[in-house]
Each structure stands twice: as structure tokens, then as C-alpha cells.
Length: 337
Ligand SMILES: Nc1ncnc2c1ncn2[C@@H]1O[C@H](COP(=O)(O)OP(=O)(O)OP(=O)(O)O)[C@@H](O)[C@H]1O
Image (cartoon, rainbow, N blue to C red; front, side, top):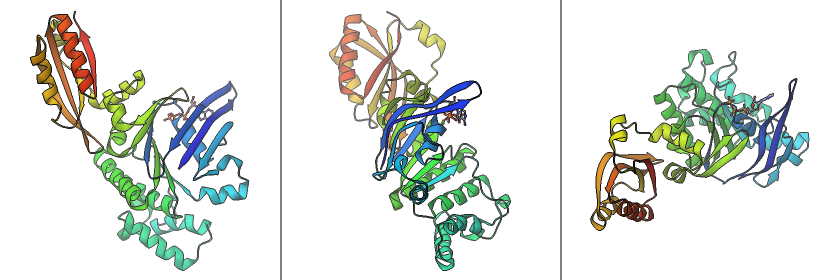
């Protein structure tokens, strides 16, 4: 479990102070996959680097599994850090060392015996699907394979937390999927807590349980990924969600509409569809479906309907209230009235 309390990171630069992290408090539960999203400069890397004290926080507290990292001396911090693995966008493998040696490096640093190292690296390479590459050099590996080595190295000392810094941003979509499945597998099999930072909502949608959205060093919204997809409150969260759930309706549909165009989110695939037909029967309203789709957020379906509601405006309002109270969310995206 990770507990961050009132964390601040201020950089001193020639041009003055720059705030990377601005009073962030956050809890990541044990065994959870937690995603932090935000545009470039939002403070994601600063926050992630503070989590294992690669970057010294200006103020605030970081606790991992109940141990306050910010209170530790140098030696204790080195031991505590072994419980935190980290993988990077650009892998950072040592090019003059083989795959085996790259993974063994972390174990040598922890003073493990040769036999222990051999057994552990063999197991790790099997876990990440690279047993046949143990004696090759990083230059002979694809990007996805390099990241697998990075993951094996990060897991070498049995960490309880894995920090992922844009771990799939340099990979193509299908390699990204295979790395995400590997992360999901190790999360489930080892009960590892994973914190990842990314600007790709696909990554969050695929594997995260909860997420936070960062802007200007602060967390502007946080919650279960499904809830944020279904009902985002913050404008920036909406912008990120729309990179996946955006439907570009033709302009003429929007401009010629004489009623209200609403976007309805409902949990499950078809269970709540009858809510819409019930609403149309109950009230003097016509409904015209413009778009319908089901997205899977970490395997849970989220139904999305875009429809035009026309008729007496008071009746349209009643229908909207009826649907809103029985679905995940309803947003009016155009109001011609
Ligand atoms: N070492 C540093 N020295 C000075 N300022 C820094 C340093 N690292 C980050 N910053 C500043 O802190 C703020 C947050 O940067 P950070 O890299 O954490 O954001 P980010 O969301 O991870 O963006 P990116 O994805 O581009 O790395 C930015 O204004 C950045 O310029």
C-alpha cells in the first residue's frame, strides 16, 4: 500500500522555482493497478520519481507498506528501495551486458549468491517469456522484448510495488497490448501493486483499477476507472476520456436538430436499454438514436448511446430526468431549444 500525504516537489532553476508536484495526497491500495494521466508537464514523472525517492520531495510524506520513506536514513532507504521496482519508457538496459546479466545486476547489488542469482534469473526470464534470449545482448532485442527484460530486472528483488514510467509509450499498439497483459499477469499472480503514468487512455482502460488525472502538479480528479469513464466531473478528465469515447457526429445532424441531443452511459451491455424505450412511452417525446456503442473498461461493458430527443420541452426534461435517474450518466451535448 502506498500513502502519499501533502507531497510537494519544487525545483530550483536559474529562472526561479518550478513546482512539479503541488500538495498531492493519494492512496494506492495493495494489489491495485493505479494509473496517473496528464499532459506533458503535469507533474506525473515528478510524482512517480518522488515515490521511490529518486527525487527528494520538498515536503510531505510517502509511506510504502506502512514505512515512511521520507523518514529513513541512507542505508535503510537502500533496503526499502528494493521493495520498489521501476520500469521506464526507454528501458535503460546496459548494452554491454546480456539479458541474463542485465537481470542479475539487481540481484548482485543485493549481495545474493551465484546459485540464488542463477535460479532467480532463470525463473524471471521464464515469467516474462524470454528464456531463449538469456545470452543475447539488448541490441538484438525488439522494443517489447527489451521492456520484458526491464520488467524481469524490476521484479528481481521481489518488490511489493512496481512503478511504470510511460512503459509502453515507445511501443507499437500490439506490443503495448502484450506488455499490458504481462503487467496484468504479474499483478494477479504476485499481488504486486502497480502505479503507472501514461498519456494514453487505452492503457488505463485496459488494465487500471483506479486512476488520477493531474494538471499543474495537482490531482484534479481521482476514482475508479469505470466511474471516471462513465461520469467524469472535471473538464480535463472529459478531454482524456473523449480520446476513447468521442463520436464525431456529422455537423448537419447537430445543427439541424430541433430538440436536445443527449449522450447516455449505462452499465452493462443491454440491461438498461429498456429505460430508454420506457421513457419514450411514458412521456410525449420522440427519440432518434444517432449512435450506439459498447466499450469494455477493464472487461466491464459500458454502453454509450447518443440520441436526439424532440417534442414538448417540458416532456423532454421529464424524460431526461427519468433516464438520468436510471442510468450511469446523461449529458446534454446539444440543446437547440
Ligand atoms: N529536474 C527538473 N528541473 C526543473 N524543473 C523540472 C525538472 N523536472 C521536471 N520539472 C518541471 O516540473 C514540471 C512537471 O514536470 P514532469 O516531468 O513531472 O511532468 P510530466 O507530467 O511527467 O511531463 P512529461 O510527460 O513531459 O515528462 C514541469 O514544469 C517541468 O518543467
